[in-house]
Image 1 (cartoon, rainbow, N blue to C red):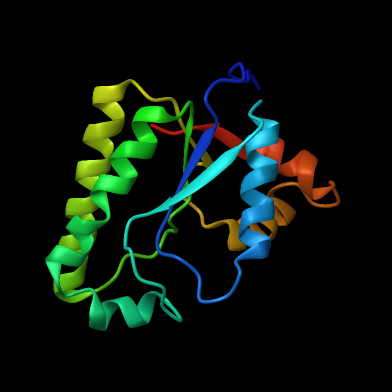
Image 2 (image 1 turned 135 degrees about the vertical axis):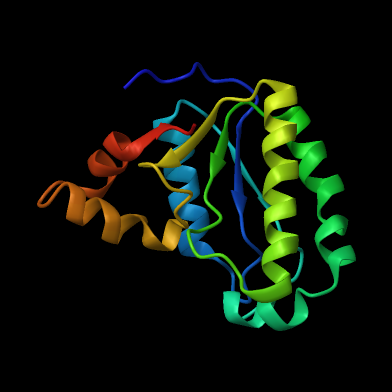
Length: 157
């Protein structure tokens, strides 16, 4: 796989902040950054509030202004970053919250296009880091996680 040269760091776009320390997610994002040739990784979130699960966002995420409030931090980081890793998960919220989520994704993709960012994902999906090991174990049985992750990281469409 062709790696980009180390630039201004990797920005990982996740769904929302964790309620806990997020140590495992941080470690996996740092590993992805290293595999892509970056010395640092920063996480930004599409939705600004921590929740127990995506299901809880289906309740509190009905306020469109909450989604919009996340954009300034995302935009600032994208403007300062090198590559971008899409890792917000594969499951969309439901109901009216899905409309806000899709609008956020459309806005994000337009920003990435405007900036000319190189975007990455694990295989062909914006899988959340908590799902990477399960995915890589299925795709590359018996291979160490870091090697399987390196093979799974690909430029997103």
